[in-house]
Length: 165
Image (cartoon, rainbow, N blue to C red; front, side, top):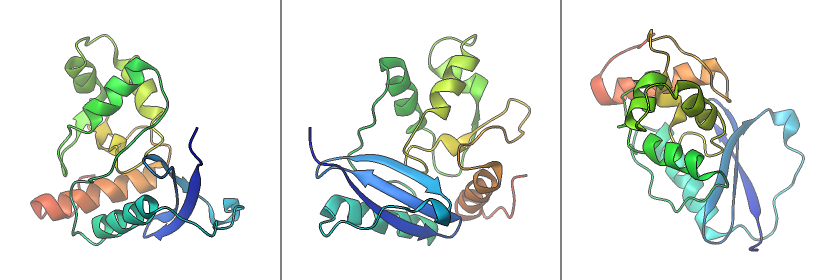
């Protein structure tokens, strides 16, 4: 197994831990500053630096799509859901019901919501773009405040909309 590396990025909505190997990004997750217990290793692979740079571009409104090799562990069903999340366009949202329909089973809303919640690559695998059928914000590992910020940020850039919610 390849060595795993970590670095940190102070985004406009909180501290992000970026993890990966020389070849893949495996995690982008929100952390409280008090949770930052690991220091930087002397060697940070170029890929993790590239990931941080692309996140900076995203937050600065200069990037709408990420170009990074991703690899997170999960079941084949979770992998399918995460791949479907990558198809949601920047600035758009879909409901959990619509995501289940795209997966081929409109009765699988809970299953897709569960897989969505197990996504460990925040922002890049855009699970924040999935909302309730009633257009309400529901569930986000980074907290609803961050989900709202991300959706507002994307809507403002994509459509000139001030707020979605």
